[in-house]
Image (cartoon, rainbow over all chains, first blue to last red; front, side, top):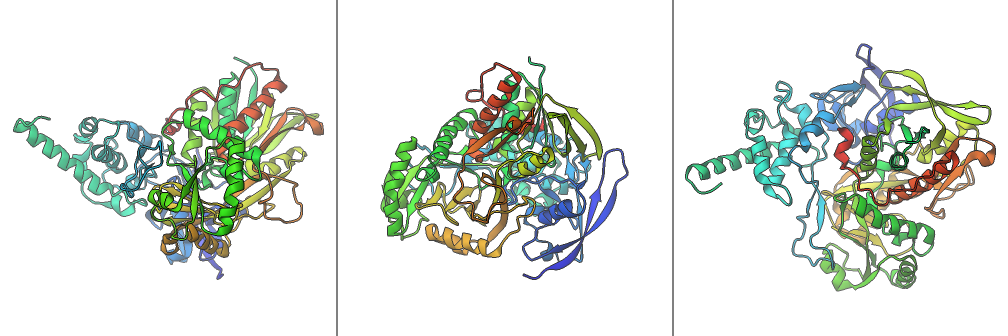
Length: 240
Length: 388
């Protein structure tokens, strides 16, 4: 296994102190992810470096950060595949900074929770299979990892602090697509304002950075479509 | 409300569930974790809510713990699991021969087990190998390894527990032979301070040997890592297990649009130095594809290692860790002459609540608190409440 030395230039901030960058030399091989490299720094060079991480396979969404300026999950980015002798690592934007690479996810979840988006949905895989006795429907988790990459990359979220943001609106679009126990009208009303789906600039940065095929950009467009159809139905007296 | 204050070291599933249990019993609780909560072993397993069937032949104590906790967790954490059940699949004659002791073992442990023909199994899971001979259905489920335990943290916080991530223990404070608290550093500011405690619980999982070293007591812990591989594509809806004794790559757990194959097993001294052996990654593909052939060509999303906290003699001769039980134990270190210090370790993600109950019973008995455990019945808050 070929080992190589790479520089990590990491954003550092401790409460009450001035932000700065620290540079660490790390030895990596072709399997080493940015997450593992940062953990190695923490273990061998600097125990004060903090970051969020949990599942290590792009399922929990905690290790979102900006790597060479691009929002990514550190657990699935291999250091050598970046191809730069120095790798710059910075925290997500559009979220309050706590320290180093750690941001506060509370505002993200405040928004995300509003229309009570379901987390478990019907599995769309092989609907025609037999089902085990006593199981009415195969279920699965929603695709969204709640990682916040889309909110960090969104140009509107950077200028409008009340903007609902791509993750929350993608979840609202899921409620409209598959209401289950939620009310799709509630979700539509929630996004139908100047801080909701009409505020989007259609930059599609959210879709670009999403690590889990959620496609928030298309989801926001689908909400606009659903609201427009609802408006026409109301104008022509076709019910709600 | 009791005035006793308990400090828990370790923000994994065990620590979170213990904070919840002790808070319900009226104790004041502070939990410290050096990183983000669930950043050690807890968040990194393949996301299986065990039926216990995996252990029903050779480790019945563990199997019974699993099926009991499986049932309780579905009740107290509704909406947390992909409740699609699991299959143990036979692809060789040897697997079929094993099915008899397997089904008998499940029966002994109270795990519902239903024998299925090849045709029945393939109708439930069309991607199963054509070499499938028969299968056994058992009540496995899939969990989100971070969000399930987060519900315990969320509920504990709401009930008054103080949860302090990025807070690393630097020293265990003592007066004579009695532990009196911890000295920590808050890594968000690099400020150090002391937290006084009537009792300190070491719930650091595979790191609990390192914490015990700070006190000078012995915990028989073997950090035993395994490699897991997540591939793109959801190749099954049920949890697919190999119907044979525990071995490399004997399970595929669907999760969202991924399938997670696990796992290998070896032992290390330092849970911070696991490595990621390339041959183990290949082994996951090879063995997983015996049950679900499509896995062979599925692109890899991630490969990683996680350390199980197995109970076994520390620093003994190298072995694979497979022979060690998956059960848990609570150690009161008064047996070594140290008062006010308890370790809870071993176990599995599925048994986190049971581990917490066992540890909380020891804690309450030591402090003279006469309150029953209520965690079997209290429904947990949603995981999102953790961030509120």
